[in-house]
Image (cartoon, rainbow, N blue to C red; front, side, top):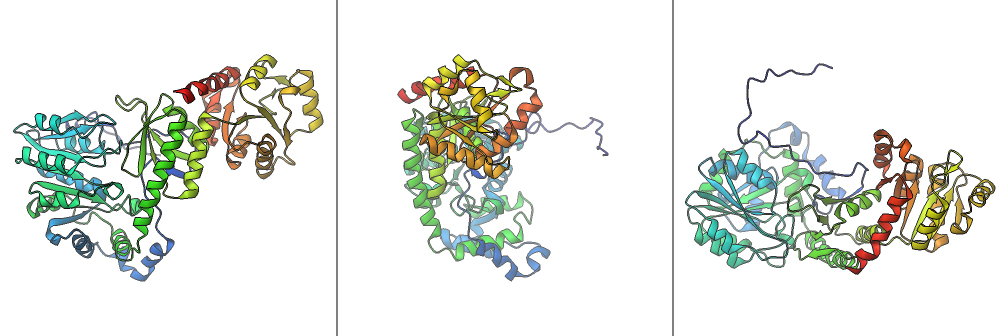
Length: 510
């Protein structure tokens, strides 16, 4: 492989130097239920099928967004010249920053807030002033107004806010507009469809407001990257000049236009289901001692010392949620996208229960209890764990061999429920795991696993795989293999499992 070499003579701009590419810290397990990016409901397959009707020119020709621009302008009740279609709402934000910000013109925003906005401002060379907007607090209008200076050129009003879901009011927006007539007020309404009050008309009535919207959330088109900005035609003209001529792909334009023209109330139904999911998930989180804040986005925002634990448990179940490890303000925070689907919401709720209140712990025999013919744990430690949580055993080894091993080590009384896979196949391992749950009368469980195949069986059975590798064998490669297979965590002794279980009553009593 030939790698391009760099002589180091050119330096990045001050806006790029020291800035890391955007990335979300994730558990290495694969996930199929993505609740960490605030995406919307998947559109119907029929929408994609419509592309075939557009013919090959939909891919061959450069895009023209004028038809979609006209559709959106009609929905907003503005002239088409006052609206620009962009590559997602992010492109609108970037264009606006590059249009009006420089080293002499600062951005005023809130913290926490949408993390890309300060990045776009700094890439434009602009200073950034951040006013705290703590979870649970109203929009800090007075503090924002107090921070306005003559060189304040862009003031951010993100409502509902990402990541907290908090909202500002019409009065907040009007006061900002009046207090900073020399500035543009950015009304970022990416989640406005989910809010109790739509501030669109207020934003359009103010002379220095640019509103940014997206089809990524409520309309479920995040993969198409279609957003738009609405504002005074002069500012929108600057934004047209600040970006490329063909920012949005022709297939994206065609699908977005069809989605808007043929919507039969599906978006409103999805929003209504999201609100139902929100109430359900909030209730479940609060029942296990997690602090949840009011959110009007398509997500809930919560804080707990167990934020990473819950993220990892969910990953073990194939569910991705957002945590913020290492963030100065959000280190205890979680953001969980609401599925907008009753079945997936039930799966999410079950995951929360699995993290904080498992009804049983299952042990695979091979590699966990029996490690190279010896007990991996002291019998008294198994007894201590059994006093806290009912135990059961799953095995692909014959019942006779297992019984002899348990009796020899004096732990047979702790594993009254035992199930056996009929063969080493993944299906039979998963089936044996499910039968162990039934035998215990449980729906939530942790399964202590040593082998990749055991982890996969636990995931197939819908329960949380917990990896176990004895300390002497716990190489980074071995640990990563289990985590990548889907183990929520990897323990090296029973003490780690006991410690986690012992925290549960504390969490439930908070």
